[in-house]
Length: 402
Image (cartoon, rainbow, N blue to C red; front, top):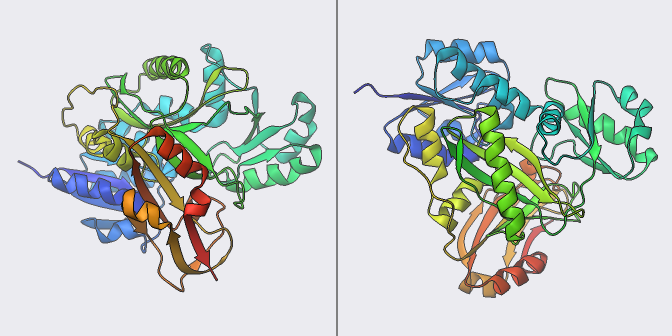
């Protein structure tokens, strides 16, 4: 049989388990971006230097290399390109029009509104001046974001008119190609928000997971996720409603067979909200955590889907214990010195320490997901144990910087 070729857009370390899964399936793996020193290129079979947001250039590369599948796993800038190329070449993937809706925050909010989903009031702007002139349309606080960026880049909570222009400028700076920003009502979360991965087969969202998302209030950007735990503490009635609404969304957009990174929350108004849905695996090793916690390997399923291999029906996740992931990060710029982990955790709970820096290496304060310096995977036997560990995580785990 002919060896199948898989084109992966990007070169981040989150692609390493994708490359491993593809190799296990016998694929020839090509990685592509404009950063030749990215770690994933060391593990692929071929590297091509090109910008992953240039659709026509990537389409040409795909044709020249006669690929059988394309993915932009955990790499948000390449999601639109992957869908475009797949559609042009008749390869597996979500419909390009649907992906355009999901990947543009203004279009997504409008789609949710038009189809009767709970949605915060939101409006898009193509210039900061336009947004400033329209500020009376909103009641503070609001969230300001680029319409087409991920990883918490350019996201600011604004509580007064004085804070608005700097936040708008920052969001515009991070808008990749659209050069558009969105201002929306801030939905204060009742309990913890969720940010984790799910999977659909033939537009049926069969594996729906929820978790607990934690932030570091002391971080340079306090809206960058700093830790996660499974299973979710969210009320079961809200989980059930969100699962139903997410299934409806996938059907409406006819998304087919795909992995998704999904962010949801329940507001203080007791309404559940779908905040973000992207047809890709999430960063921060979320699918790897789900493999630990539930035994379901969404990464292998995503690869199989991309190259047109059949996938059996999935079941909803059943968790084997209580799992947590801490995103290791520095509170300030400096040189990495050491990682302190409480002896109790070392003895009883650590499954994996994945540290990406060495002593004396420069580290940045935590402004976005790209400033993470590693992950810590933990398992607990009870809900109370994991609750206490998450409350005390800043005491139990410390990144020492000089």
